[in-house]
Image 1 (cartoon, rainbow, N blue to C red):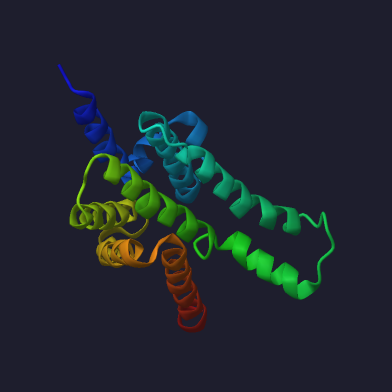
Image 2: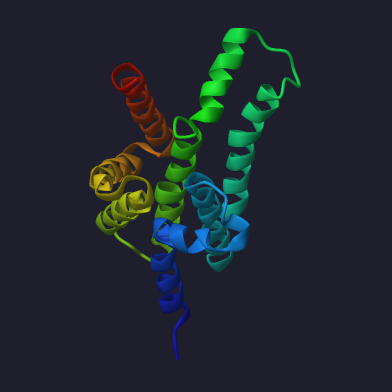
Length: 192
């Protein structure tokens, strides 16, 4: 008979790999015409809900709040519900069109650092094991987007997980946003 702890460990391992499910979920009719980014967000949300219920922590509610704030506020601004000046509207358009600048870093850090760390603590996973699991799962989640280039995401994930352990979630989110912003500016300047 399986023990509850063993089952929780198995679920933890299963849920650390959301990127592996993108192509499977894409074949479900409801998701057939969604972008990989949208599917990725849905998978993270569903996995975090499962983790929340299995470990009696309500991560899904926190995650859903982040999605609503991350997508809802820019959308309200974009739809001109309130009148904003042109400069502000341009900034909002950049945020809406480039979710990787702000929304993805926040959601990924909540999932791959905070949630995995919190759940890992309930399973008595060491800090070193958490850093490895977090970095590997973060890198693997990017394979559908980047292919073999996602190897650098493993290194980035290891660095961000180490930072998370020492400085906390807020600082890691800011580092991730900064990195994505630098990449965005580089691509604008050099790639056209």
